[in-house]
Image 1 (cartoon, rainbow, N blue to C red):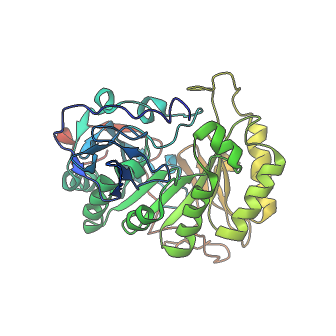
Image 2: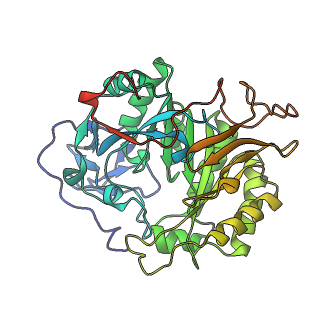
Length: 377
C-alpha cells in the first residue's frame, strides 16, 4: 500500500452540511465500506477514505463537500475537452476537492490533492447553481477540476435541477466507479469526457493506484447502456504511455468496443506534481498518436494542449471537408447544418448539435454565484 492509499485520517469535528451517501454498506467488524468506487474504502467511525471527502460517521458514509465548491468559472465547452457538444457555447464549470485516484502526473493537483478546508471557497445549492447557469447564459454545467465520482450525491442533485431548466450536465471524470454508482450517476448526466490515462494495468497500478479494467467497463457501459454523449482524453506522457504498440492496441480496442464515432483527444503532458523530471510531450508524439488513431478507423481524433489548428479541427468522414475549424478554443470555420450534417455532402457528424454555433470563444470568466450577473458577456 502506498502512502497515498494509506491516507485514511481522522475526520474534522465540523459536520455542517454533511449529507449521507447512497452507496455504502456496514461490515460485520463494525466498519463501513464505501461503494462509490472500486477502491471500496473500509472505514471505522471518524475515518475518511482516500478521496478525503467521504467519511464514516454515525454508522454511515457521509459526503463532506455537498453544496461547496473550489470555485466557479465560465469556460468554452471545448476546454473540457468536448468538441462535439454544442460547439462554441459557454459552460459553467466547477469542482470541489479531493480525488479517488493518486495520479503522480496530476495536472490539477492543487484541487484534486487538496484537503477541503484549504480549497472550498464558494457555495451553492443545486437549485441555485442551475439557476445561475441559466441566468449566465450557459448551455451546460461541468463537474470538473476534480472527479465528480466522489461528490456523486451533489452532482446528481445539480443534474436534476439543470435538466428541469433545459441545461445539460457534463461529467469530466476518470471513470473509476463501481457498477451500482455508475448506473445511478449516468441516469442524470447528459455528456462526459472520460480520462483514459493509459492502456496497461501496470500504468494504472504504478502511477494512479487504480485498475484499467474498471475504467474500460465504464466506457463500454456508456456506449452500450446509456445515451450519454461522451468523448475520451488520453494525456500522453513521454516514456510512460506513448509507445506505438500501446497506442495501436488502445485505438483498435476503441474501435472494436466503442465504435469509430466516439471522439478521442490526445493531449500534451507538462511536468507537474510528482513527475517534474519527465519532459513535456513533443508535438510530434501527439501527431503520431493521432495518425495511429485515424489508421485504426477512428473518425474524430484530436490533439490538445498544443497549438495545432489542423489537429484540433473536425473533418467530415464522408467527403473530408473541414466542418468545424478550431484555433485553440475559437471556432474558425463552420460548415454544418443546424442538425449537424456536412453542408457539402450531407454526412451526419456524430455529436450533439442544436442550431448555429455559439460565439463564446476562448473567454474564461471566474464568477461568484452570489454576485452572478444576468449575462455572460
